Every structure is written in structure tokens, then in C-alpha cells.
Amino acid sequence: MARVPAAVMKVLGQLPRAPRALARLPNATRRPLPTPELVSQPHPWGRTVGLVTVVLLGAWLGLLIVGNVRAPVGPMNTTMTLRPSLTGGTKINVSPLGALTLDSHIAPVRLDVNVDQLDPARSQALVDHPERLSGLQDEVTEDVAHGTRDLALRSCVAVVTGATALGLAVYRRPRRALAAGGLALTLLAASGGTALATWNPESVLEPKFSGLLSSAPSLVGNARSIVTEFDVYQKELARLVTNVTKLYDATSTLPAYAPDPSTIRVLHVSDIHLNPASWKIIASLVDQYKVNVIVDSGDTMDHGTAAENGFLDPIEDLGAPYVWVRGNHDSRVTQRYLEGLENVHVLDDGRAKTISGLRFAGIGDPQFTPDRSKVAGGDAANELAGARLATSLRDQQAAGTPVDVAIAHEPVAARQTDGEVPLVLAGHLHHQEMEVLPLGTRLRIEGSTGGSGLRAIEGEHPDPIQTSILYFDRETRRLQAWDEIELGGLGLTTAEVRRHLPEENQPGATDSPSPSSPSPSTPSPPRTRAP
Image (cartoon, rainbow, N blue to C red; front, side, top):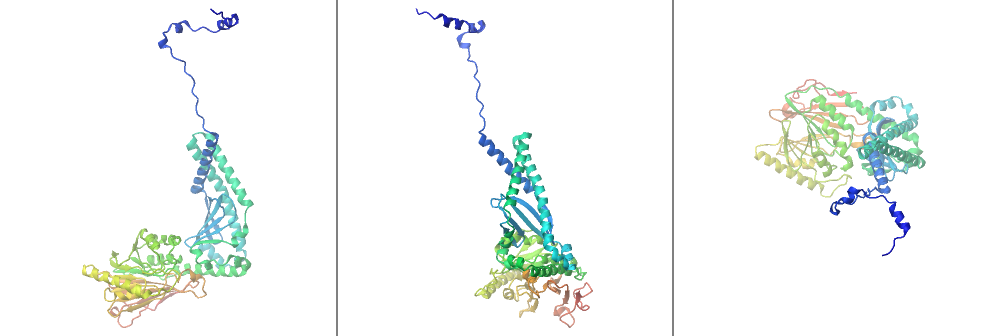
């Protein structure tokens, strides 16, 4: 038997002995002592990516919710906003015309400037004091600088608040949430420093146009020529501001009229061509004449693009049902957008609807020519559309639901309904006409309620703004009288109202002046003209 060295035995003797109670336990009941398990820790890169994601998302939400500033810039009211961007730059949104994009800086943030509206008070101040135009450039520069400072401060608060709040929701630890807020502030400061270092003031000379502005850059002029000939630009700006301001003045001086409560009053508008001032005129007439229904015989838009759709939103607040047919400047995109608006009734393919006591049927223009092109065979297409409308009118008559008023954009189409309806409304020609067709149908062609559109601000003698109030008997639903209303075009503050009676309703003259009496069937004093 081998001997264990004495040194080894000495070491074993110094080891602590197992408790006797444990030594007495049977082998089956002895369990191994538990060993501690390793807790998995997240990888440092994963934690970093998660924190950066929380910071960026929280900062973006903060900017989206509270990171905008309303600031006056010269005679305009604007909204300024910072947005995350890979390319930077400045985007100026001029709804509904489109946008201008400037390569103003290179940074992960973009400055958005939305032009909300022209302030009438500040515009009028420029008209009353034209000497202030000499300092308009400095005033605009100061306004932009003041708005940018306010935007920077609000954006800092927005990104810190958004990142901190999201960090607290994700991590449930105040220190981690505060770290997210601090990192968001650091990133915004770095972005601002980069934008300042790369700022390019010359970018205003070469803007990029989108939306409607891309196809009509003449509306805003050539930026380089504006800079080089600023004196000329000042005079043009004064004329534009004067025209728009005086147009608003003209709408407020329209003569008031107390309508006969026994009539149904229809406001006929047409060929607005994207003139935003038309909505104020229409709303004023709806209120003054207690209009029951508005009929728009088309060409509400100019190019029919989706960028123009926001122009249509005020229709919901005009105070009366809005009946509309498509013109040759209105696209199917425009039509679908209008079908989604409240209080709007889109008529097409001869469909009929009873609105405010009158039954209307209409058809859209079969052609879409926003570039003002002349399509070969255009009249034939409109004659075919008019024939379809006439067939629908005959079907309605046979069903015992006769139509009171038919609507088409092109007079060529409207003439095909002769003998099938008492009255048909049209537009397109940009001037007013009233004609009794050979088989007895009365054709009413409306002028341009938009003064031929935005081009009215360019010409020296712009087209007048024209619309009409039609009066119908509630019992017979036949036309009793109509008022032609005309504003003297942009820059002119005249407003003229002329009363007309159908031959069967007036004792001799075919053109009676505008009345003081509310009855639409009696002659009245000379036409009313507002200075």
C-alpha cells in the first residue's frame, strides 16, 4: 500500500470538515449546491442605437406638435417650422399655387415657411403710405430674422420636451430621460451651427418651383431681375397690393338687398380660375342676398393639379349648398376632391339632384385642356356631351321628376338641351349673356367670377368680376328675375348691380334697373353703382 506524503496529509487535515448532519444524510437526498447564472447584458452599440432612436423620434414629435411660430413678414402672415431633412434648404409654401425651394443651407433640418394670407390692414397701410415701400426690404428682413429667432427658441424647447418625454416613457428612468433631452438639444445646436456655416443668401436668385408655380413662373417674376431692378419691383408690388386691397374694399361696398322671401335665390358663379379673392365675394353675396344655393358652372381651377386642391376648402364655409360641374380646366382629380367636401353636390353624366327646392342636372366638360389648347373636334365632343344631358332630361321628364335647371360648362353643350328644360346655365366665355333658344329654353352664360383668374393681377386693365343672382318662384320653380353683379376688376372699387326681368314678367322693357323693393317681379329705380 502506497504511503501518502506527510505534507499532503497535513494540508488535507486543515480543510474544514463537513457537518456531521450532512455527512449522515443518504446519498439520494444530497443535492448539489446551486451555481450562480450569468445575466445577459445588452451590447453597448445596441443601447446607443436605441437611445439615438428615442432622441430623434422624440425631437421630431416635439417639432411636429409645438415647434412652429406664426410670424408677420411684411404684409403677409406666415407660419415657420423646422423639419428633419437629409438635404436641408428652405421651402416656401404658397397655397394653393405650389412651393418654392431654396438651397439656402446644408444641414439635417429644413426651414418651412407657409404663407397663410395677406393681411388687409398692413396691405392698406402700404397703399395709404407708399413711401414705406422704400423700407419694405429692410422690414421684411427684420421680420424674418425676428421670426427665425423665435422659431429657434421654440424649437429648442420642443425637441428637449419631446425627447425627454419619450425617453421617460421608454426607459422609466429620469436620468436616462434627461440624457435623451440633452442629446436632442446638442443635435439641434449642431444642426443650427451647420446651417449657419453653410448659409447661402444667393439661393433666393435661383429658386426651384413646384406645383402650379412650375407651370406659371411668370406670376412671381424672375428673381434675378427683381434684385437688379428693385425700383421697378417696388412699383409692381405697390400695384399688386393696391389691387388686392381695393378688391376687398369693393366687396364690402356691394349694395345691400332685402330679398323676397317667396323666392328661391340661386347664386350663379363660373370660371373662378383659382382667384382666392372670389371666396370672399361669394360669401358676401350669400349673406347679403340670403342665397339658397350656389351653382358653379366650371373652371374653378386653372391647371387641375392636386397641388391646387386646398384652394377648394373654403367652399364648405360659404353658407349655402354648392352645386358644381367640371370645366375644361378642372381635372378628375379636382372632381374627386370636391366629392369629398361637405355641402358640395357634384353633377356629371346627366345625374339629377333636388337641392333647396329646385331640381338640377348637369354634365362635366368632356375635354381637359388646362394649357388653353384648341382640340380638333372640340365642338363635336361638347355636342355629344350635351346630347347625353338632353337624353337624361327626357328620362327625368318621363319618370315624372322634371329638371328645373340644367348645367354645362360649354355653351355648345348647353344648347343641345333646348326644349328639354326651362333654363340651362353655362360659362367658359368669360362674359355674361342671356338668350332664349329656338325651342324655348333660356340659356344663361355667366362671366368670370374670378376676373379671368390670377392673371388679373398682371394686366393694366383686368377683366371684371361677374356673377348673378337668379330668382325662382317657389311654386312654379320658374325664373322670375335675375341680377347681374359686376365688380370693376382688380384695382377698381366700382360695384354695379343690374336687374333684369323675363319678357313675360315685365310690362314692356327688357332691362329694368336694380330695385329698392324686395319683389323681383317689378321694375325699380336706376341701376345701383357703388363708388
